[in-house]
Every structure is written in C-alpha cells, then in structure tokens.
Length: 313
Image (cartoon, rainbow, N blue to C red; front, side, top):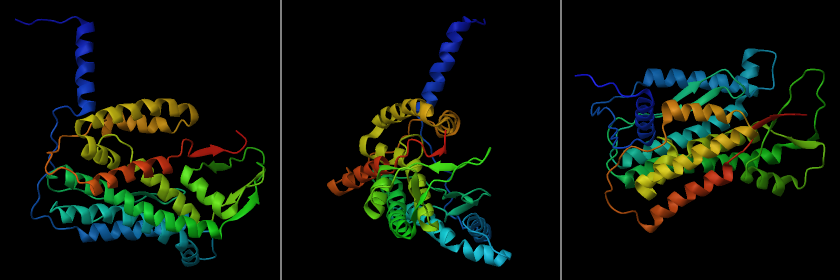
C-alpha cells in the first residue's frame, strides 16, 4: 500500500536529507585505492608547460615577439608557479610521509589576468587518522604561505607609489584589496600612502598577492578544503560548526563583494560544509596542535573581505 505524505512533509524531509549531506553526516569518503598508481608524467608535464606559458603571458608587460613577451613575464610566472608548487608539494610530501598515495601536482592553465586556476594533487588511498590529516592539510598552506611572504616582500621593495589613474569614459580600472598581512608589509616598506595614490605592484608583488589569496581560499573551514582538514584534525566533528558559521558569514560578505556568491554556490553543490569521518589515531601533541593554530592565524592574516573593487565605485 502506497502512503502519500503531505507535500510540506516531503519538502521538510528533502531539506533534512540535504542538510545531512552538507554536514557529511555518517559519511566515510574512501578514495579509490590504487596501490599500483603510476604518475601520468606526460599529462603532468604538458599541463605544467602550458601553465608556464599562460602565466608568463599574463604577467608580461608586452614585447615585440612571442619569445620576448614570455621572457618579460618570467618574474611573475616563476614567482607564482613557485608559490603554487610549494603549496602542492607540501601536501605531497606530507602524504608520502604517512604512506598515503598521492599524485604529483596537476597545474591548471587558464587564460586570464593570472594565467592559471592553480594546481591540485589527488589522494589515491585512505588517510589513516587525524594526525596524518593535519599534516597533509597544513603543510600545503604553510609552505605556500612562506614562499608568498618572501615573494611579497621582495616584490613590494620593487613596487612604487603612484597617483591613481583617472578613469577615462567607460574604462574599468580594478583595485585589489589588502589582507591584514599585505597591508602591514606595505606599511612597513612604503609607509603611509598619500591620498589619491596607491602602490603600483611589481610582478613579484602581484604574484605574492595572489599567493596570499590562494592560501586563504584553501584555508576556508568547509568541505574538503585544507582549512576543513585542519579544523577536523583539531576538533573532530565540531568542524561542522565552524563550517556553518563561515558559510553564514559568506552571505554577509556578498554585501561587500558579490564574488563571494560563487563560493556559496560551490559550497552548496561541490564542497559541502562538513568533513567526512577520519579515525582518531594517536592524540595530537602540543607541536601539532600549534601547527594547526598557525594555519588558523594564516587564514585570518590573509583574508581579504573585498578582493577586487572598481575605481570610483
């Protein structure tokens, strides 16, 4: 006998199941175990070379020949790829240390003002416990953050203070926001910026800015991002509270910058909010917990409420 539930009750049940899915409740995600995995070096190499070219073109100030254009873009390209490589290799070596099978980095070329959508590694075997999860999640952002700091400081010394350009007609001039740390670096190196002026970023300073942004986005405490790994390793299933809190914050941030709506959509469709179950294993020692809190501090220091705005708006 079929029992038809009232529409309102069916909607409530669907919403409850969806919230449960967002929380990853009772979810155990086991990567496809591939003990005989062999890196696809051909694909990896092609993607890296292509990304090298797209980032070199994106960071170039122009040139008379294609070769000259690429050469002029090398400072930006090498700096940005160095940051991304440090981030991904931090994950990779941490995974190898805990005998977790992982791929080398796959770089993602993308024609844009930065020339790439970043890089990823794939986990090919289960993560055994929260201690391994902490190292795998934290080593990438920490390594990328360190290189970003070095590149940023060098780049800001190469940068100059210039008057803001005056928009001509319908011209759109983007202005990139500061994280707290980037602001402090700028203040230390260039002092107080006069009204009507701003820093004209050198290629290295621009790469460092992107490095901070990438690090911050990866440290969001939602789904299977690095920040979620770290919070789950520190606090277990309480991670979902941090995830829901930040998810709500994203809604308020869209008032400041509509681009945050993209992350709301990604969270609802791909990233989820909760973290899948990982066994406890050995308790984290003081150093390991400190490493986790360092990641939280990095997230706060590199957060940019309004990454991009338009001059005059």
